[in-house]
Amino acid sequence: MSDSRFLESIDNLKPLIKIRTGRTPKTEVCRQISSCLQQGRLFYAAAAESPLEIKPLQLFYGMLGFAKALVLGRSLHGLETLPQTHGIRDVSAGNARISDLRVKIEGDGTFQRFNDVCAPLTRIPYFEGTSTPAIRYVPSMKAVNLHGLELSLKDILGRIPTLDDLFRETFNELPCCEYFQFQNNNDRWTLEVFDRELFRDRESLGKLVAAWRSRFPFLKQWRFDEASHHWGRSYVKFDNFAIEPAGRDEFGEEFLNASANGFTAKLTQKAVNDPMRVLPSLAGGWGNPTYAIVPVQGKDVSEFSLHFLGMFLLSSLVRYRPHTWVNALSRSIIEGHPADDTVLALIEKFLDLNALDIPSFVIKAMNPHLDEFDKGLIPI
Image (tube, rainbow, N blue to C red):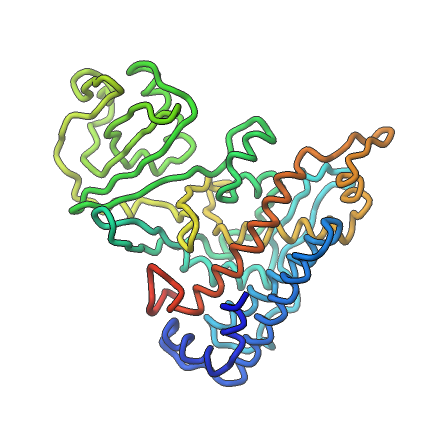
């Protein structure tokens, strides 16, 4: 983590924070940020060499160090102003299986401060034309709106970008996140998705699109543009052209042309709305592919807050339910307790993602020179 080590120097850190926030931080605050970064880096380094039996606990403390550093680096307040609690609680049933472990978001704590720093930093990367990178910030929800929310570990893992395929294999059900691709060419916005189900005709295509719009309601504001078969999947593209009035068949012959490999919508008047205004906060804006996340009880939760919640649950599992965790890792079957190892591969991949994504996000958010999309002031 050489990029983290670079920020552990107060002389390196101070001018970068001024670029990001527009304010010069006090030397003492920079010293505290440096200490948090160093502690986080060392915990992550220790986790890389540790057995799975204790790894989640070390990763959580690594994330905690980076989370505190980011909060201080954005607020420019000292560590003494941070609550001495996590602000979340393990509310799992005593006999819960690992995937059913539950966390509840409560009062003011480190989670709330981290969430409220991450919320305005949630952003959508896209390309102007074919190659010019661009970015738009679309905030996720503040902590005050998440108070009382409960999520299971399964709820969380199903919403972590790039875990979608493994989640589908593990639970034999749709994940709560999907890959999306955006592009803007002369104010014509397009959004592309891929579906494992192959449409056969107009009717099946209509059902496929309706299913996507049901899972991700913001797609109701995007017009269907074209669909075809690519690499054994259905490729579907939406755009910001005007949507036909309700009650008219969007997939009827009047509006849709058939082609050898699919269907294409007939030209209509271009929409005047900026479609970004009706988009929810999306994941992946700090280096990963863009993913849409199904809201949790109607609430948009930052991908990084989901990481915090997931790592907290797994660290709680290691600390307070070691018998459950060790039994799962041993893949043994105890009388009355079947092997709880179904979710292990998913957890291991999540741990690996956390060790990469959280330090990378925090470092880029603090060091504009490493941010390929935004090298200046970012929202607070």
